[in-house]
Length: 160
Length: 160
Image (cartoon, rainbow over all chains, first blue to last red):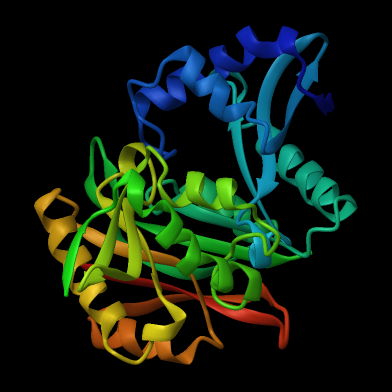
């Protein structure tokens, strides 16, 4: 598996991966009815670098890396990762996260922060902890989960 | 003093208030070299409502109110407040915050969150605490202060 910069030709693959996650609305704070154009404009925005994880020519995951804030907060990175539905459980998110930490270091970020890790997304919380992230904040009821209602979200952080 | 929606004619006043705060770079995560057009595009963006506090025809403060996240996070509001340099210490930030909490309620937000309250901005931290905000997270070294170096930032939150 290789992880490389996303290209224009990856747009359909990225949307294939993002769409079910956006439509489910259980893990990312993105509108469930977000259009393909809107989602790709967000995921491939000028303010971020976007990567894909590819194996034998098949895109199995994608992530973005950006500054979490401007100005005095621009040394803290932020990422979002999505694995293709058919490829979960194979460690792809972990590999994308490892790649993103290295990329962030090369870009001179000093830390990485996730702003809204949904507390019911236990697999993600466990993985980020295993990747060295600490839960530095709990946002009470900050995520409207389509099944569980208002659930807490975590702010997770690690130095680089 | 009245607080009202910002109009196009307020642009010069808003910039007069924002510019010294942006140039100082001590309290807001905005680029210190941000242009007037860039700052006004941000402060008056389509994704937010912007207000001014006015007394005898003089604009003394401004704030914005927006959703802090999209999708499952869109029920949490976020605000930024700036008081004119010549009008600090008169309770204008407090009145803008009170106004914003009421506005947020009317817009059916369920909570308000500040993402990056600079720890050295003690007056702001005290005021938000007095306004019912709790410090729900501490981001270590997340703000590059031009005088104090890397300082912590707080995530502050209150239900509405």
